[in-house]
Length: 222
Image (spheres, rainbow, N blue to C red):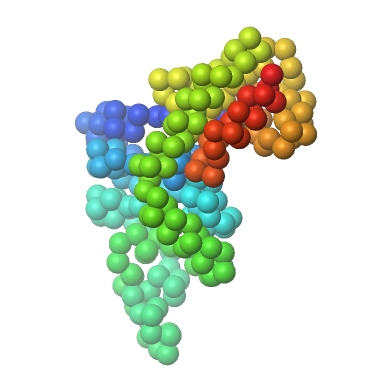
């Protein structure tokens, strides 16, 4: 999902195009994953997928994770080393027993900085919530909020920037007569939080929102 317009990229279509040309496919899913599910048809084309935990995953700052396909693990070379990715890192009593062997899978690409374990425990709680609800259910909920907004926003005052046929959880609108930054401050006075990106008002709908809040947003825009 593009951060400034909310346009959702067709990963399967683009992935198929790249695979036919043997082009490596790296996806930054930070603006979408958690609010939307990834299908097996999409994932089969992706070589590397990266996600920051502090966006739609409801996690803390300072953490991110990545998926590496079997093809990526074979092609991408490991260019750095640290004790945390060593295959013997679990044996802290013998850290001088050096080896170039690493932990299996994508963990060999981990950075050397230590994790902030307290926020990571909060993120684990968020993951438990996502597993309990299900990404498909979250996506359906979010899309219902998006559709409600599209049906009720003041169309005489705003135009939709996001391509409706490629819309995800982010809807961007542009005022026909108001300064976007002034409008952002006005909405804050109504306890409605949005973001301004490239002159567009960016609105995000997620699992912690409900119809009444979207109604409040529409009323504030009017």
